[in-house]
Amino acid sequence: MSDFVREDRDRNERVIHGLAAASGVGLGRAYLREPDRLHVPRYRIAAQHVEDEQRRLAAAIARARRRVARIRARAASRAKLIPEMGAEELGYLFDAYVHILKDSRLVRGAMARIGTERINAEDAVRIEVGLITDAFKRMDDAYLSARIEDIREIGNRLIAFLLKKEDVKPITALPKGCVLVAEELRPADTAQLDPDIVVGLAAQIGSPQGHTAIMARALGLPAVLGAGSALAEIETGDLIAIDGDRGEIIVHPSQDSLRAIRRRIDQLRAERKQLRRLAKRPAVTLDGIEISLRANVELPFEMDSVANAGAEGVGLLRTEFLFLNRATVPTEDEQAAALIDVVERARGRQVTIRTLDLGGDKSSSDLITRFGESAASALGLRGIRLSIACPEMLEIQFRAILRAFAHGPVQILLPMVTSVQDIRTARDLLARAARTLHRRNEHIPHPLPPLGTMIEVPGAALSADALAQVSDFFAIGSNDLTMYTLAIDRSDEHVAHLYNPLHPAVLRLIQFASAAAVRARIPISICGEVAGDPRFTALLVGLGFRELSMTASSIPAVKRRILGIDRSSAVRRANLIMSETDPSRIEALLDDVHEAA
Ligand code: PEP
Ligand code: MG
Image (cartoon, rainbow, N blue to C red; front, side, top):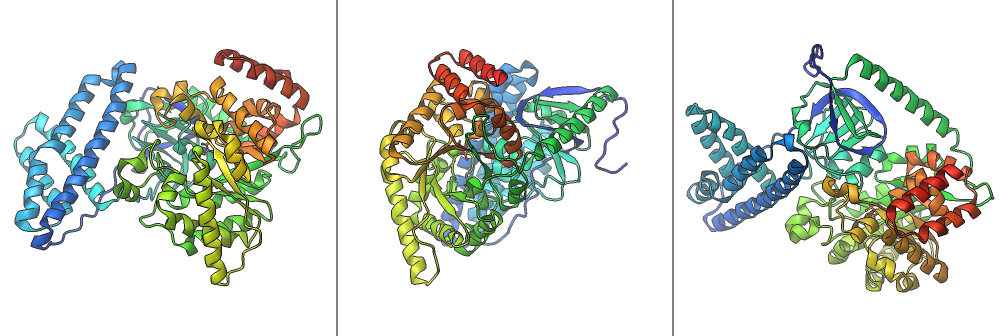
């Protein structure tokens, strides 16, 4: 038996419940994602730089404290819901972390050592952690030896913040066929996974609407998120199954369960094969209305599945994923190469390239160092706001997009727009980028690509009339529109049960924006997750949408749904749904229309 495989005999099956985040079933050996070993640089600093170095350490401490407070708040509210989690123990643990970060020998010692030995902050933290843990080990006390891990954990966190290494931890060398288990998987982590190696994901925190879940769905990886601290009992090598439809993690499945799991894996495979046969058929309703089904794409390699799914181009390219998992911002040439690759692989079908939507759960430590927590906040510098705050970055991206435009049809989409001014500023920068390319004698087709607006903030939906005057098209981002309308953080597992794109407020905003687009005679599509859920298809067609964009793997199931819909009855049912104010009645009407067709 290899190191990776743990003995399964005589172990009882256990089911851990979490949130169903990405459909499918995966069976494999657990692989726990442990924090990376950090290489700690050691160098001497000049006397005049001592204060700067101490300030650098103080900033890292402040960030680590904020991070611990955030994890603590999440764990505490979860512990209230699940008593076995041991709220008290968790409280002590976090108290210890906060104390260590506030005023401890570790912090005082490292600060002093920077001054007395004139060494860099990372090395000062490393030395102090070593001295403290050695002293604790000598004391032969169970409580203190348990604290050794806390001190090491805090020391590593501080060093990672100092090195700005948080976002560039590659998930490498995973054993083939493993299920990745982690405390938290960020969207950037998930983007690194190879679906030929990993068969499923489970994480303590996270929710189905966050970008980690979206990325897992794009990769076709079954995922259960928000499963809480029960996951901490899983060890690397344990046999586990991830049921991404039921939100279950089955640890040491019994022989009966194994048989049932394998049967479902075979069934799902057969169903997928059958759906693939629809790839070449157009998506047309029973009464002849053609619906354009496009793909949401995060990384260029997904273009293979886009072609296989029979997508009519790319309705949303989330370019921020090209920027995550890197220590530096990609150059214009690097960005252009990646975009040209996507455009060429779309083979003449249109690619909708969204400008950077960094910020919120898709931030990086580099941005946080520049802009503070605002760059990690859903209400802060996210999307177009961040791009406008860094106009040189947006202009470089526009130049890369325009270079890709020379290789095939492209349109440009702006995320998180709230005002007409956002679009005007972006249009000016686009024109400037075009002038620079002309000066360089680069060929770009005329006219410039259409510039569209994501409607994903309630304020944008309510001022859609004004935005339509300066936009060439609209794309509804129902994920964020739901989050901001209902004040529900889409990556927070504690409020995931309240997240509901069928809430009348959200539906009315969608209808309001789409009516504005019709009046202004500009095209409108929808690219939030509802577009890829066959349950919503009849409602969206009934509301007048003729273009839906979704994860490529969802296209066949949505197409099958469209083939069975009659547009006029979908319109009648949509009108009925829009006159309803009770979300549960809306759900019932939606399922009715689903069954009726
Ligand atoms: C949305 O908000 O619905 C959307 C499509 O954008 P993202 O999920 O990337 O925020
Ligand atoms: Mg969005």
